[in-house]
Amino acid sequence: QVQLVESGGGLVQPGGSLRLSCAASVSILSSTNAMGWYRQAPGKQRDFVAAITKSGSTSIGGSVKGRFTISRDNANNTVYLQMNNLKPEDTAVYYCNGPFRLGSHYPGPYWGQGTQVTVSS
Image (cartoon, rainbow, N blue to C red; front, side):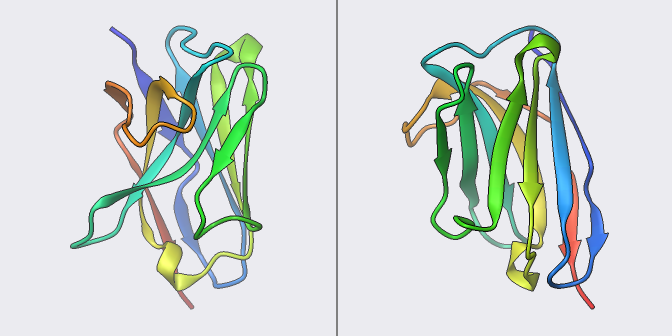
């Protein structure tokens, strides 16, 4: 059983930054299998945010492109989401997920517990 543990959420003002971390209990990244982030705002569906493979190939969702970046630490089975220039519409619960094929529209079988990100003045 793979466990994904997220950290780093919180309250931030518009224009601010946060960094989320997701640590996997075992290595699930490969050259084709990615880990990534989804988010879910109240009353809305869960949407794709970003993903990365072991080799560093990435996919970034359109609504956050240019503001969010994703990176990984293969040695520690950890994926990071750097969120800059945050907007109120980024407010959501952010979930770590994997593994899945990079570019796939379908999430993988494992989910983290979620971490709340609130962007408000």
